[in-house]
Image 1 (tube, rainbow, N blue to C red):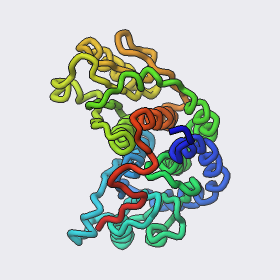
Image 2 (cartoon, one colour; image 1 turned 135 degrees about the horizontal axis):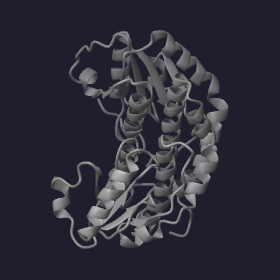
Image 3 (tube, rainbow, N blue to C red; image 1 turned 30 degrees about the vertical axis):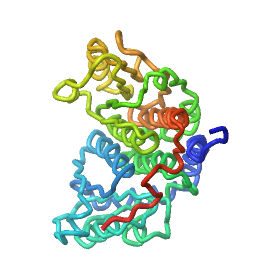
Length: 341
């Protein structure tokens, strides 16, 4: 493919999209944070599917590690299929959907609100049914996303949710890193991961992460399947040396996402252990001896580092798809909005 794909154009727009979010979303973020603080929730639930659910996994770690609020992911079918009523008083519900249209996400969000949970919709469509169902709506300001593969809506949704939690916490260091994201993400797009591209064949591969970075490992594995038709599995670095390591053989590709956090050292140790078994292991850390470091951009805070990592990955995986003769804008069997019950 000689022309720039929609996916590539949208990846390159991510820094500007986050800048739009920071410019246009401040009042809604403050208002939601003030409302949540008045409720003083005892726990948090999330409602989402696909890439949006990976956003929620990211926010789960942020909530538990900074606010001390435990997080549970609620299956949307609890309301839409089974009609169960949950006890959600004194809780916060975050629902994430770029389109805000899927009936199961909307139904579970409405059910949470009816059960006295304070509900926040994070969406790219503020006139959507999801926005109407929620107490508060955070517009991610991503603008139109035409490629089937979500990229800028993933990053802007994650940034919007993190901004809300940081505002709720009053964490100045984290808020400063969020405000600096546009520049960090611009630099992340230019990170050269050509060594990873060269190591990827047509078989399977693993992606790894731990803590907040596990969410972007999950997102990366999905994108390999979605845009490249490559079978990828995501694991926590704490689990991969159990059963999954059995299928590692010479040259087996592994891409490990490490942020500059408390899990970086242990993840690097696992990366080196896999490399010693013959795997072709690439890791976003300089703390490895046998695995191969790849260029990365840190963001000034370990909680925002994963967003720069996934942007570097998006830029790389689009190239993998192109090399395989696949148009990442129109993955087979997929469409942009999937509405489930």
